[in-house]
Image (cartoon, rainbow, N blue to C red; front, side, top):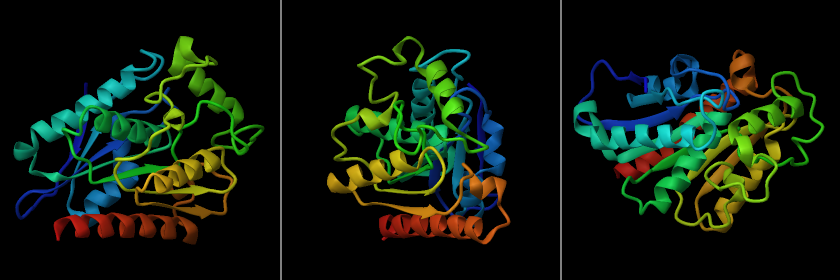
Length: 255
């Protein structure tokens, strides 16, 4: 598996490590997308080491291939923390869209495996979490992502599991019933895109389980507005709020 690694040129001792997972509806994308991602922004602003895994896409292999690859990358980051210059107690898992869904799944999977790898913060940005229609993902005709594309992505990713009654929580984190013990979370989403409801439901369920979690909602019908409309005030605000959420948790951990 190819992994793209972004490292600070000059670091005074070990720094936080970020596993940043690219989006693409589970069907397209590449690890080099990290160069235009929120993960790169965090690396630039905070001097973190970022790993972007080239997980298997659904056209190559359906679930659980992508999850296994992303968790393998997390294990690599943790087990090789010394040579990567990463603090094992300051590991962040995040990603956009399908990468956000995989980030949430990796956090659930890591917890269920006994928590050998502690995750300090999860940043599943407008995540693709729910394989079933929600009020915001049903009959959605937005340009960048919509109902038709969402169904196609889930069908490819789940394979024979698509439409079944027993979709695993590691494939569709919305199927989880116990959100306790997961890392604190921050995310943002737009109000007119398909993933609005599943994003807000995920944050609500984390909160109800006693996990510190929050979300900001921005007015837009564009999925990924922070990238497609990167120059707008709302996109700048979204990036700033993400940095604040990161800084707050990492500063707390460092103290």
